[in-house]
Image 1 (spheres, rainbow, N blue to C red):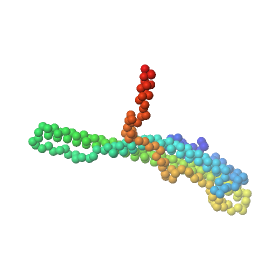
Image 2 (image 1 turned 120 degrees about the vertical axis):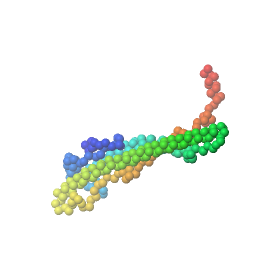
Image 3 (image 1 turned 90 degrees about the vertical axis):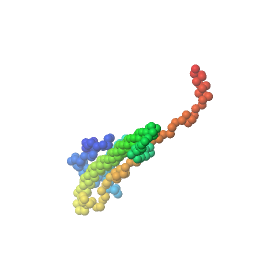
Image 4 (image 1 turned 180 degrees about the vertical axis):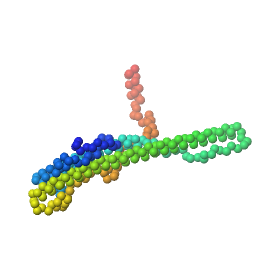
Length: 255
């Protein structure tokens, strides 16, 4: 498999790189395998020979490696998305209501107590407005962070699908060369045969069928859900199964 790897940089760490193009030696090996298949085996209902099944097994192994790397990468993003979403829910639930932005208009004449009360109301309004503005700013930051992480999550799936597509295309090319060798060997053995490389007697061409949904544009389900610490129930002493008599007895013995 090492010869068929093409160095490439992508965000899916641990996944195989894009498949390289099929070289001359690989084309020749596939042609020879096709000629040997014409003399030794008969294709099954799907057009497979042992050689093409080995090619499909190699591609399936690559798909399994890509899937494992995708799961790990998605879990890493979900561990960052989950607490941010929990904090968004908390901030949204505790968002101060919107009030009038205008402070109360002082009226004259006012007593000292009324003036003090008016100043207190104005300061409370300023604190309320500042708290609401800070909460909205934090909410906007968290929403942007979640949107960016969600976009990265989607990009990971498209990257995985692109890598597997390159390996599936490589499989198709190798199978085509194998089929060419197979048909040429048959036409040499049977001079008047009507078989052609493009359509050898309506024999189906082997194809690789991916098994995972992310190849078709689907995304993995959320792997990590986290509850914000503020949403956890408060631990009370009554929840603990304490036996005070036993504890006092053991403490007296330790003395």
